[in-house]
Image (tube, rainbow over all chains, first blue to last red; front, side, top):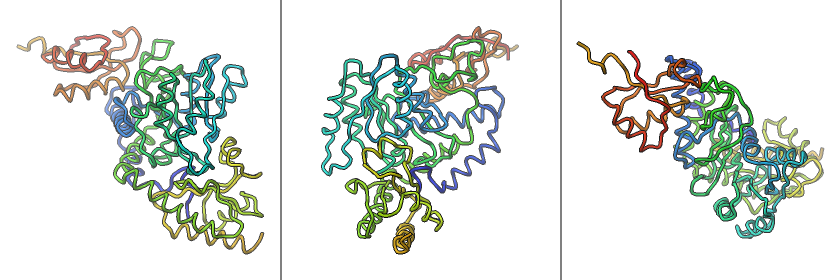
Length: 383
Length: 81
């Protein structure tokens, strides 16, 4: 099997991540924050350790700024619905995943907020930060309160200039929420330096943890309305959720084994080096793109951005036909719309979307050759 | 004969588990040893909370380090060991 769908979830996981989860289930099987016996404390220490490691990794001062979520989508919902108020105007980019677009669309549809989409010009060869910031500035209104954007697209390797956007948000007094689903573990992110208010991160993609883990990282002092309420092990006699992060935002039992795995995953990424991972993935997609562009009938979207994600189509075949063909030959890619209506509209993909390839740190050029071989056989067969 | 600090332990009620662990790590950096314990729910009007148990001889140091670290203490208590 050739796994090239790391943008969906990274695979395989490092053995040490799996071991950390097993060890947690065997030795730290209590429920953190629900007692003070040895097993509850062991679980609490596992969780606190991950908060500390995550805080350091993303440039935060305190573990209390790290909130665990099941995934990026929940983190984004918590951030957006926790920060936005009636009458607010929101800006989002034209490459957003539905995890951003759908909560905003729903709130707008209910008459609670309004929004505008700013262009990011992914097809432009010499796109500059000022191109994007200019587009943002032109859409700021008196009631614009928040800007949300994906750091890196889940469709292609277009990456937004977060520092410049963060500086603009700071200048204009806008809250800055970032979807780092495709950039965490691939691009260094220091929240304080960039000026991010809320960073939403999956544990199971670039951070090499398991599914069921994610992070909502909050600027110190940022206070969100709660999306959910329930038991969190503190102030149990109060009807109101505690005001203090992170327990304010974490309800019910946390997935301690997944958090143990995430902690080790972050450590693995740190040991390997984010730049090493990114340049490896970029080199693989560069290798692939060069060869795809030589093949008849292949269209590669935004070839000017080469990074961890590559999107293409094959003339005469729907994206899902290509995806199915490759899957039947043991090559795992994702075809269709990739939960990004906005992104596909911006990239002008045809009906049916496109095929996405996202190699990871464990892939090699042999894997890319396997994909190319399978594609060639499809094109030759002319199905 | 055991003195008062040997019969009683000092407790600083902090709040959530995360806050208690954060406070513990701040104190550990100042070489003040603490143990995380569950605060007595009967004494804590809001219900469940976590606290740090420590040597009462360190009371002054602990209060100072937590204040410098910006860590809020809900209450200070003493309880029998």
